[in-house]
Length: 635
Image (cartoon, one colour):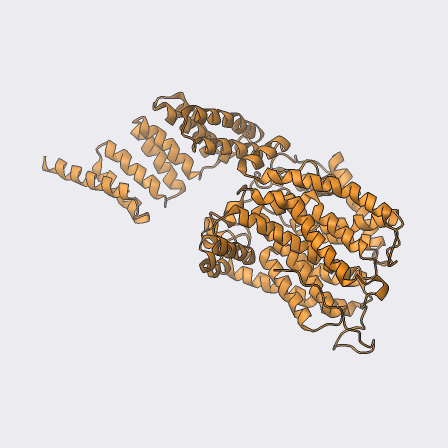
């Protein structure tokens, strides 16, 4: 998709209106941006975007990229999978769970890329940067319309602040965050089309397109539904429309939100999470009472503002216990409360005067509300990606603070902006450098998780993630010494995670798997590594009694040591947690075979094959058991 410059509004008599429209509010001719300069700026924005994010294109897959790429079977089907993408929840193609969210547009873009270009992280990363560049273009064009009474230098300053801000690296450099890019882009285009109709009196097609693009934005990621309130707010602050007019403008967008909710309710089996919120996903669950939970939430909201001003120590992970629970009387909570109280008071005071800084503050608060954990608990403690859409409010407020402090005549056709260039450079140069140097953190899992472990030193998940990367890497190398070295690097990271969260079942299981794999290298079932693995699996089961793989691996340790009684006991306990696990039935069959209890062996092999007919080894072993049983009966 290539940006198309907006048509020059036709000059019409003021008294001529379209049905239901107000008189035109056309930009004064002296401030209108010449077409040639507009195109120069557009091309410059695209070039600037690729300069600061170009090095992210060469990154591989990392983090949760797999859920919308290599491990999403709907996306892997390309165009053929699009029907199922619209018929199921966002994660169904990855984990067959039809809950949590409905974002078919994002997955459709990924499926089309897979269909056209094959499976390549380079392609997906390129399109992340490409759509971010298109966002820069439409953001500038839309801000030209919103701030039409100001010199174009104001919309341009806001745009470059937004594009360069390092807080966006998680969104642009992470393939999974295509949902953030598309949802915000479509929202901006919705505002652009709406203003083409209501402000510039162009064809009614534009107002219909504004509803369509808003619908596409929600189908990309539902958190932008707050734009149903943001768009009327734009008209309140930057037009003289009457309240009834704002209601007329806003109601169709509210209708789009309701339509999305109806579709989502119809498609998803569960409207939200089909599982209990746990502390590793959202550390607010560690709070013992609601005042502490509220205080910690407010503290996190204050941390978001800090990162907008000081985007230096950025990290992929803010989970437990990187942000500890605090009380309402803690300095962290009190400072955050004071900051937000001051912002809200200023915003309310600027409401009547229609101050752009007031607009920026309200925009930030409204768009952050759905991911703030204040009203609805989400599956994450904190994330830099949650600032993506909301950071526009910060950029608007900062831009107007700068031009006011520098006393720039923003209503003049050619204001003196030398001082503005200097201040902008002081901000944008370090922003751009930080963005460029941050992009390689998303090169691969090792780069991403090691950077997180170095910054999020108190995060159990960050240590567990880098530990598992070592374990996984070890299993892929053939040299025994290299493999052992990687296994040994993983162990202290697992223990660092468990020191923070002792009942972290995933870390306990993976630590057990790490020890088990080390035991395999010794070719000795009596190896002490298997004893360490056994302890970890037992702790995992105690922490999470339905962790089926821990039962299975613990049972296998007993089985390999010919302790068939404990192996059978463990496998049966596992089946109580998950009665439909074919592998567990197969292992039980093998254990009973070794005890010469062929009738029980055959029974469990049959159960395994009923669940998974493709278990050829189980079929062959069952045949051996049947023959052995017949031979025994003959004797």
